[in-house]
Image (cartoon, rainbow, N blue to C red; front, side, top):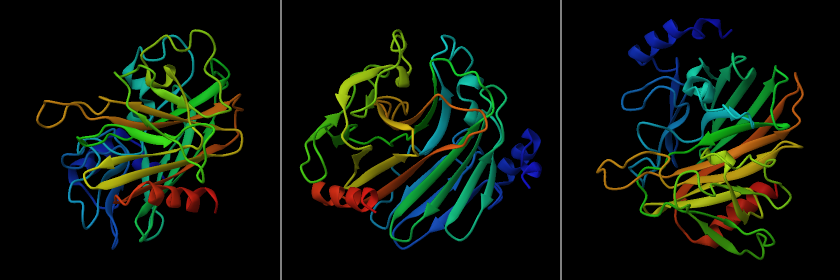
Length: 314
């Protein structure tokens, strides 16, 4: 079913033609307009950046995502091998290997990636656009190699934010709750320093695992209460809500400069990221994570909490 799309030659041809439905789809709803696609290029949007190409609302004409990049971009797999980023192709393998785009129905797109050559992971990502103004992501993957160093499989997504004045994300401190919140503002001092926030029951990597500047390897002393955060963009808010399948762990990640330079060159674009950690992955077993992205006018923190309640208490 996917064979016609899974060659570099086919991708190059489709990228050049920009054929609707071949690599991407534009959704127009009363609340949001967005483009979702695979690793293809599309105008200013560069190849290798799958996920949400752009996102606007009737009151928000600028996409919160850097136009060249994307939101909820499946970026890389990782573990604790010491030479993990020696080769940019394998480090960013989900971006570099072909994906197949498929339109499921009027509101749902699917990105399928067959078993990757280095990490040996097969994955499917479904994006469902709600007319009410949010995007749901359902990711599943199956490892086909038993080679994970450190006793876990890591999966990393990046959202590159388009020159916000405030680069911070905000989440609930461990020990607080939706009914009794205590908010933490989180913006790291530099890329790769204290970049990743763990949940209350999670534990850092084994000794030596925090010695590199990779975002996933540098752990903050902070802990979150629930796996979600929000960030401000113009007069809107972006709310990212995550949940792992049973046995998985969510880690929240931020970089003040992960999205490169702003158009004026006098500042940097932050990255608001997330990781799924799967302890002791088994060959042939399927693992997953779900996410919801909400973009709407800012109406205060209680409004954010109401959206979190609706998601986690469903």
